[in-house]
Length: 444
Ligand code: ADP
Image (cartoon, rainbow, N blue to C red; front, top):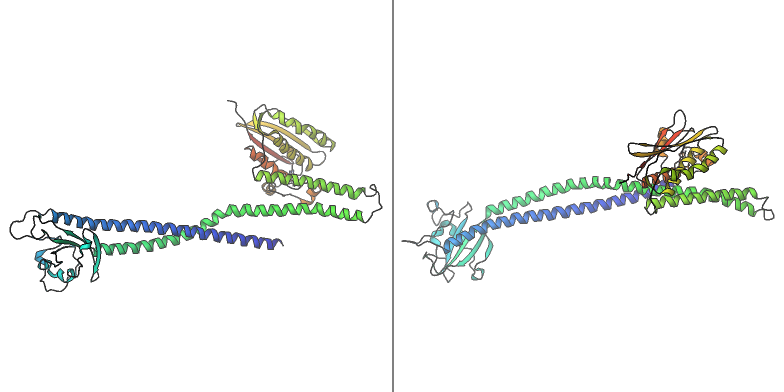
């Protein structure tokens, strides 16, 4: 039954882990894709800005042409006249950068001869008056060009341009190549980083889920243990009631034993449900605390005095040494409850003839209350565990003493809510010491 419940719990946890992993994976993917797109877009627009800047500069040069004496010249960067092959030579292999095409109003190219061997390619550049003053990308013979067509005024100093349509054609194969290789690098590197982030997100999921799984397990264990604790007294009460039903003519005196056993179990159930409620409230931080600045005497006297009689009636010794006069910010009722838990345990686990002592001291700016006994003592291994819920060192022995294993859990919660600490030490030569550390409220 327990195993079945455990596998069901692991299945739920596994499902939760997968869901979280997919979520983290998708988040990383979205992040990388958006980042990649931003980087690529920035690079691309920078590239185009560079090309456009070249075109704009060229257009400005055309518009502000200096006065030409003699034959008008057309010069475009990268156009080295000396190296220009003959007009009929094959298409140039090396990409050229900028060319200038001059059209008349009938869209006829008028500077064919100035273009040299580029003409075979550039003749295919479409000339559309509708594209006037626009930057257009075109591809001819697998070469990429960015163009802008302008209308040059008739007053232009250079007769070759005056009154003509001039198109600046910029080849950007180099930039396109680097843009493509950048895109390639970007995709590959982001792919690799995404894979790395997958591994990291898997590990992160495991780490972040750990405390959740732990408290989940604790919670379900707590509920199971509580149910188990409730079941035993209920079964006893049911058994006793059913037995009494078989004796309808008996008097109460004749059935005193099952009645008193049932009442004992009802008492156990009462104290158990109260403890459970208290712990649940502390877990949800809904316990109302009323803090007051008081001296130890005011909250220690109440729980200690009645204990003296109980302890002495059990033929145990009692020692009391409360002397410190400091101001503490405490919820008196809660601190009383804490002391009752500790004194009750000390009395329960100390045999006849033993001693239960309570003392206080101030050390290093902290206030300490110590409840010690000369009882059975607590092993080092159990010292770590006894603050856990439902933990009992010797189940059969505690059954006789009536505990549920919740007292110290409640004690720990109370100390925590007072920003204090609780420790266990061995009481030499025999028994244990519970030390509660509380902060002192300094007067201003
Ligand atoms: P319980 O109601 O069973 O006493 P607690 O949470 O108060 O539950 O204590 C948990 C367990 O710690 C006890 O069952 C007991 O085994 C051990 N314990 C607590 N106080 C003492 C003590 N003073 N001496 C020896 N054992 C103790």
